[in-house]
Length: 266
Image 1 (cartoon, rainbow, N blue to C red):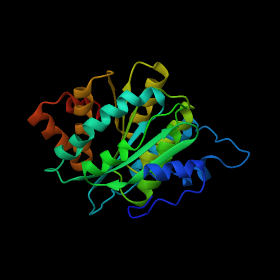
Image 2: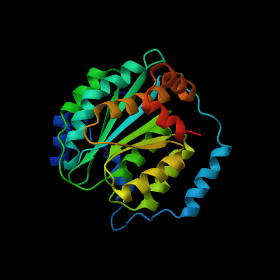
Image 3: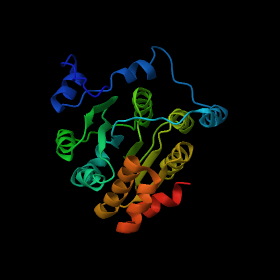
Protein backbone atom coordinates (compact mmCIF):
# COMPACT_ATOMS: atom_id res chain seq x y z
CA UNK A 1 0.00 0.00 0.00
CA UNK A 2 1.56 3.28 -1.03
CA UNK A 3 1.72 6.23 1.28
CA UNK A 4 -0.73 8.32 -0.82
CA UNK A 5 -3.11 5.54 -1.90
CA UNK A 6 -6.73 6.16 -1.00
CA UNK A 7 -9.11 3.51 0.23
CA UNK A 8 -11.32 2.10 -2.57
CA UNK A 9 -15.09 2.67 -2.41
CA UNK A 10 -17.15 -0.08 -0.85
CA UNK A 11 -17.91 -2.90 -3.27
CA UNK A 12 -18.83 -5.78 -0.96
CA UNK A 13 -19.76 -6.44 2.63
CA UNK A 14 -16.09 -6.66 3.62
CA UNK A 15 -14.92 -3.66 1.66
CA UNK A 16 -17.87 -1.64 2.85
CA UNK A 17 -16.99 -2.43 6.41
CA UNK A 18 -13.37 -1.50 5.89
CA UNK A 19 -14.43 1.73 4.22
CA UNK A 20 -16.50 2.71 7.21
CA UNK A 21 -13.49 2.20 9.43
CA UNK A 22 -11.26 4.28 7.16
CA UNK A 23 -8.77 1.41 7.00
CA UNK A 24 -8.53 -0.18 3.52
CA UNK A 25 -8.47 -3.97 3.42
CA UNK A 26 -5.28 -5.69 2.34
CA UNK A 27 -6.85 -7.01 -0.86
CA UNK A 28 -3.70 -7.93 -2.74
CA UNK A 29 -3.05 -10.55 -0.09
CA UNK A 30 -5.92 -12.65 -1.32
CA UNK A 31 -4.30 -12.99 -4.74
CA UNK A 32 -1.07 -14.20 -3.18
CA UNK A 33 -2.39 -16.50 -0.50
CA UNK A 34 -5.56 -18.00 -1.89
CA UNK A 35 -5.11 -19.17 -5.46
CA UNK A 36 -8.28 -21.05 -6.55
CA UNK A 37 -8.19 -24.72 -5.67
CA UNK A 38 -4.78 -24.64 -4.05
CA UNK A 39 -3.37 -24.60 -0.55
CA UNK A 40 -0.06 -22.85 0.25
CA UNK A 41 2.82 -25.27 0.70
CA UNK A 42 4.60 -25.13 4.03
CA UNK A 43 8.18 -23.94 3.81
CA UNK A 44 10.77 -26.60 4.55
CA UNK A 45 13.54 -26.00 7.11
CA UNK A 46 16.03 -26.02 4.21
CA UNK A 47 14.09 -23.30 2.42
CA UNK A 48 14.21 -21.14 5.53
CA UNK A 49 17.94 -21.80 5.87
CA UNK A 50 18.45 -20.78 2.23
CA UNK A 51 16.62 -17.51 2.88
CA UNK A 52 18.82 -16.68 5.81
CA UNK A 53 22.03 -17.59 3.96
CA UNK A 54 21.25 -14.93 1.36
CA UNK A 55 21.49 -12.19 3.99
CA UNK A 56 25.27 -12.14 3.65
CA UNK A 57 25.01 -11.33 -0.05
CA UNK A 58 22.64 -8.39 0.30
CA UNK A 59 23.85 -4.80 0.23
CA UNK A 60 22.69 -2.59 3.12
CA UNK A 61 19.49 -0.70 2.35
CA UNK A 62 19.67 3.06 2.51
CA UNK A 63 16.90 5.64 2.44
CA UNK A 64 16.42 9.33 3.13
CA UNK A 65 12.90 8.76 4.47
CA UNK A 66 11.82 8.71 8.08
CA UNK A 67 11.96 5.35 9.81
CA UNK A 68 8.92 3.15 9.19
CA UNK A 69 7.35 0.70 11.62
CA UNK A 70 4.43 -1.66 10.96
CA UNK A 71 2.29 -2.08 14.09
CA UNK A 72 0.26 -5.29 13.70
CA UNK A 73 -2.30 -6.64 16.15
CA UNK A 74 -4.53 -9.64 16.52
CA UNK A 75 -8.01 -8.07 16.65
CA UNK A 76 -9.96 -11.25 17.30
CA UNK A 77 -12.40 -11.22 20.18
CA UNK A 78 -9.96 -12.23 22.92
CA UNK A 79 -7.78 -9.23 22.10
CA UNK A 80 -10.18 -6.40 23.03
CA UNK A 81 -8.53 -5.57 26.39
CA UNK A 82 -5.06 -5.47 24.79
CA UNK A 83 -6.33 -3.41 21.86
CA UNK A 84 -7.70 -0.82 24.26
CA UNK A 85 -4.41 -0.87 26.16
CA UNK A 86 -2.36 -0.36 23.00
CA UNK A 87 -4.63 2.51 21.97
CA UNK A 88 -3.93 4.23 25.26
CA UNK A 89 -0.16 3.72 24.93
CA UNK A 90 0.59 4.16 21.23
CA UNK A 91 1.19 7.91 21.53
CA UNK A 92 4.24 7.14 23.66
CA UNK A 93 5.84 5.39 20.68
CA UNK A 94 5.91 8.69 18.82
CA UNK A 95 6.92 10.87 21.75
CA UNK A 96 9.97 8.83 22.71
CA UNK A 97 11.49 8.86 19.21
CA UNK A 98 11.20 12.58 18.45
CA UNK A 99 14.82 13.25 19.35
CA UNK A 100 15.98 10.13 17.49
CA UNK A 101 14.51 11.28 14.20
CA UNK A 102 10.81 10.52 14.03
CA UNK A 103 8.76 7.54 12.96
CA UNK A 104 6.01 6.68 10.49
CA UNK A 105 3.65 3.90 11.59
CA UNK A 106 1.22 1.72 9.67
CA UNK A 107 -1.52 -0.14 11.51
CA UNK A 108 -2.31 -3.71 10.39
CA UNK A 109 -4.91 -5.92 12.02
CA UNK A 110 -6.91 -9.07 11.37
CA UNK A 111 -10.21 -10.24 12.79
CA UNK A 112 -13.39 -12.15 11.97
CA UNK A 113 -13.50 -14.38 8.91
CA UNK A 114 -10.67 -13.70 6.46
CA UNK A 115 -10.42 -9.96 7.20
CA UNK A 116 -6.94 -8.45 7.26
CA UNK A 117 -6.59 -4.71 6.81
CA UNK A 118 -3.81 -2.14 6.64
CA UNK A 119 -3.99 1.62 7.19
CA UNK A 120 -2.12 4.39 5.46
CA UNK A 121 1.24 5.42 6.91
CA UNK A 122 0.85 8.05 9.64
CA UNK A 123 3.40 10.23 11.38
CA UNK A 124 1.54 11.48 14.45
CA UNK A 125 -0.17 9.77 17.38
CA UNK A 126 -3.53 11.45 16.83
CA UNK A 127 -3.84 9.96 13.35
CA UNK A 128 -2.97 6.47 14.56
CA UNK A 129 -5.36 6.78 17.50
CA UNK A 130 -8.09 7.86 15.09
CA UNK A 131 -7.56 4.73 13.04
CA UNK A 132 -7.48 2.43 16.05
CA UNK A 133 -10.67 3.82 17.58
CA UNK A 134 -12.65 2.82 14.47
CA UNK A 135 -11.81 -0.87 14.94
CA UNK A 136 -13.67 -3.25 17.22
CA UNK A 137 -12.47 -6.80 17.86
CA UNK A 138 -14.37 -9.74 16.40
CA UNK A 139 -14.10 -13.49 16.75
CA UNK A 140 -11.98 -15.47 14.31
CA UNK A 141 -8.74 -17.36 13.76
CA UNK A 142 -5.25 -15.88 13.55
CA UNK A 143 -3.99 -14.59 10.18
CA UNK A 144 -0.33 -14.01 10.99
CA UNK A 145 0.68 -15.32 7.57
CA UNK A 146 -1.07 -12.37 5.94
CA UNK A 147 0.62 -9.92 8.28
CA UNK A 148 4.08 -11.25 7.39
CA UNK A 149 3.30 -11.24 3.67
CA UNK A 150 1.99 -7.69 3.82
CA UNK A 151 5.14 -6.56 5.62
CA UNK A 152 7.24 -8.21 2.89
CA UNK A 153 5.41 -6.29 0.15
CA UNK A 154 5.82 -3.00 2.00
CA UNK A 155 9.53 -3.66 2.53
CA UNK A 156 9.97 -4.45 -1.16
CA UNK A 157 8.62 -0.98 -1.98
CA UNK A 158 10.59 0.95 0.65
CA UNK A 159 12.59 0.24 3.78
CA UNK A 160 10.62 -1.07 6.78
CA UNK A 161 12.72 -0.74 9.93
CA UNK A 162 10.67 -3.06 12.13
CA UNK A 163 7.47 -5.08 12.36
CA UNK A 164 5.73 -5.21 15.75
CA UNK A 165 3.16 -7.94 16.35
CA UNK A 166 0.95 -8.20 19.45
CA UNK A 167 -1.11 -11.36 20.02
CA UNK A 168 -1.81 -14.29 22.28
CA UNK A 169 -2.24 -17.34 20.06
CA UNK A 170 -1.20 -18.97 16.77
CA UNK A 171 -3.54 -21.25 14.79
CA UNK A 172 -1.49 -21.64 11.59
CA UNK A 173 1.33 -23.83 10.28
CA UNK A 174 4.61 -22.98 12.01
CA UNK A 175 6.79 -23.95 9.04
CA UNK A 176 4.73 -21.77 6.71
CA UNK A 177 5.08 -18.77 9.02
CA UNK A 178 8.82 -19.35 9.32
CA UNK A 179 9.11 -19.34 5.54
CA UNK A 180 7.44 -15.93 5.45
CA UNK A 181 9.72 -14.78 8.23
CA UNK A 182 12.69 -15.86 6.12
CA UNK A 183 11.50 -13.54 3.35
CA UNK A 184 11.45 -10.65 5.81
CA UNK A 185 14.92 -11.59 7.01
CA UNK A 186 16.25 -11.25 3.47
CA UNK A 187 14.79 -7.74 3.34
CA UNK A 188 16.31 -6.84 6.71
CA UNK A 189 13.02 -6.46 8.60
CA UNK A 190 13.28 -7.56 12.26
CA UNK A 191 10.04 -8.82 13.80
CA UNK A 192 9.28 -8.00 17.44
CA UNK A 193 6.57 -10.25 18.84
CA UNK A 194 4.82 -9.40 22.11
CA UNK A 195 2.82 -12.30 23.48
CA UNK A 196 0.10 -12.01 26.07
CA UNK A 197 -0.48 -15.18 28.03
CA UNK A 198 1.31 -18.53 28.05
CA UNK A 199 0.15 -20.37 24.92
CA UNK A 200 3.07 -22.77 24.33
CA UNK A 201 2.45 -23.27 20.61
CA UNK A 202 2.31 -19.54 20.00
CA UNK A 203 5.50 -19.06 22.00
CA UNK A 204 7.41 -21.61 19.90
CA UNK A 205 6.32 -19.94 16.68
CA UNK A 206 6.93 -16.39 17.92
CA UNK A 207 10.39 -17.23 19.22
CA UNK A 208 11.38 -18.82 15.92
CA UNK A 209 10.09 -15.89 13.86
CA UNK A 210 12.08 -13.53 16.08
CA UNK A 211 15.21 -15.66 15.71
CA UNK A 212 14.96 -15.89 11.93
CA UNK A 213 14.48 -12.14 11.47
CA UNK A 214 16.97 -11.08 14.16
CA UNK A 215 14.16 -9.51 16.14
CA UNK A 216 12.93 -10.35 19.63
CA UNK A 217 10.12 -12.08 21.52
CA UNK A 218 8.78 -10.88 24.85
CA UNK A 219 5.83 -11.84 27.01
CA UNK A 220 3.70 -9.29 28.80
CA UNK A 221 1.00 -9.82 31.38
CA UNK A 222 -2.66 -9.00 30.92
CA UNK A 223 -3.35 -5.55 32.30
CA UNK A 224 0.36 -4.66 32.52
CA UNK A 225 0.10 -1.33 30.76
CA UNK A 226 3.48 -0.07 31.95
CA UNK A 227 5.22 -3.22 30.73
CA UNK A 228 3.70 -3.01 27.25
CA UNK A 229 4.46 0.72 27.07
CA UNK A 230 8.14 0.08 27.81
CA UNK A 231 8.30 -2.62 25.13
CA UNK A 232 6.60 -0.49 22.47
CA UNK A 233 8.82 2.49 23.27
CA UNK A 234 11.95 0.36 23.03
CA UNK A 235 11.02 -1.02 19.61
CA UNK A 236 10.10 2.44 18.35
CA UNK A 237 13.51 3.77 19.42
CA UNK A 238 15.23 0.81 17.77
CA UNK A 239 13.30 1.32 14.52
CA UNK A 240 14.11 5.02 14.42
CA UNK A 241 17.76 4.92 15.48
CA UNK A 242 19.04 1.36 15.63
CA UNK A 243 20.85 -0.47 18.40
CA UNK A 244 22.89 2.55 19.53
CA UNK A 245 19.74 4.59 20.07
CA UNK A 246 18.18 1.70 21.99
CA UNK A 247 21.26 1.38 24.21
CA UNK A 248 21.16 5.09 24.97
CA UNK A 249 17.42 4.90 25.64
CA UNK A 250 18.03 2.05 28.09
CA UNK A 251 20.75 3.98 29.92
CA UNK A 252 18.81 7.21 30.13
CA UNK A 253 15.46 5.79 31.17
CA UNK A 254 16.52 2.43 32.63
CA UNK A 255 13.48 0.87 31.00
CA UNK A 256 12.91 -2.84 31.39
CA UNK A 257 11.64 -2.98 27.80
CA UNK A 258 14.94 -1.72 26.42
CA UNK A 259 16.90 -4.21 28.51
CA UNK A 260 14.73 -7.12 27.42
CA UNK A 261 15.21 -6.29 23.75
CA UNK A 262 18.94 -5.66 24.05
CA UNK A 263 19.38 -9.07 25.65
CA UNK A 264 17.95 -10.70 22.51
CA UNK A 265 19.42 -8.44 19.83
CA UNK A 266 22.84 -9.98 19.18
